[in-house]
Length: 192
Image: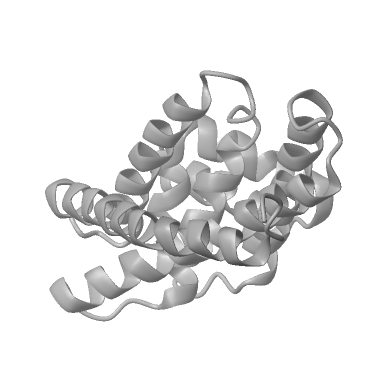
């Protein structure tokens, strides 16, 4: 693929806004992630990746609530917040690992990569039994994003993504007992 084709494929999702920009970014991330992330801008800003993530999170939440969560408003809020916050947390952990191991990278660039990878797969991750496959796919997209976009190499990118996953799982497992205890303390004592 020539340099001109790569630039034209990349320019659309980064310059279009709204639904057309969302669609072209979605198609490019899913069909040609190596091209999409190879020409990723040094300073992508936050507005386009956040808009992409917001549209994806709204779709994911709406479909999840309609089909699986019984139209529960509290669950809808929790799903929506999770869809928006997890890319920030994942990006923060990856950014910290990258900064410690390979040098300095702009957080906004790493967050933007996570926003596009996560947002693109929200189209499918609401489907039962597909969520796990989408998480693996997202990990693959992030390995590609780090290897192509940051030029960290495939091996180092894989190590960063796996380490990020392990740290997030340890964080969640350490928080769960606290949340369970808080639920017991907050709930009124029905038996007594």
